[in-house]
Amino acid sequence: MCAGCVHKEYPDRGNTCLENGSYLMNYLGCANCHQKDFVLINNKASSDDDGEEIVTYDHVCKNCDHVIARHEYTFSVVDEYQEYTMLCMLCGKAEDSISVLPDDPRQSAPLF
Image 1 (tube, rainbow, N blue to C red):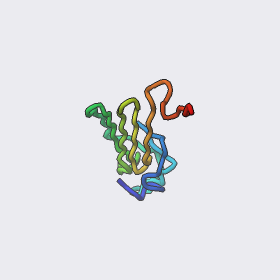
Image 2 (cartoon, rainbow, N blue to C red):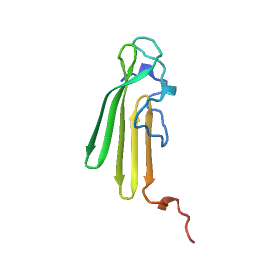
Image 3 (cartoon, one colour):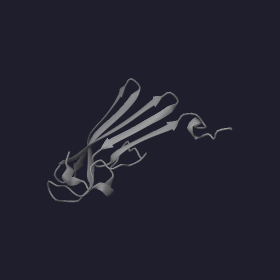
Image 4 (spheres, rainbow, N blue to C red):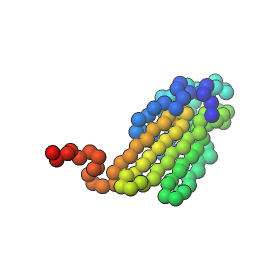
């Protein structure tokens, strides 16, 4: 992973978790070949460990195959919530939790 290729390392992305793709607004350019071109995805792998889906891949420079960052995305169901996380030097860090129920109990207004 290369801190010289990004504007900010692990920017806070709130609840925006990317399963694929790249956050190009944070891409400064390749520190190895000094080109700012497309970012490719290599070595994509997914696994399912005890109900948790994990997707990993490398962001690489199109011109010289320099590894810019390693991306990790996880998805799991915990109790009645879908849990998402993302950790990547380029795309940032984020977490999200969404209820599997039609009405999210955390969003309901108190009765009294």
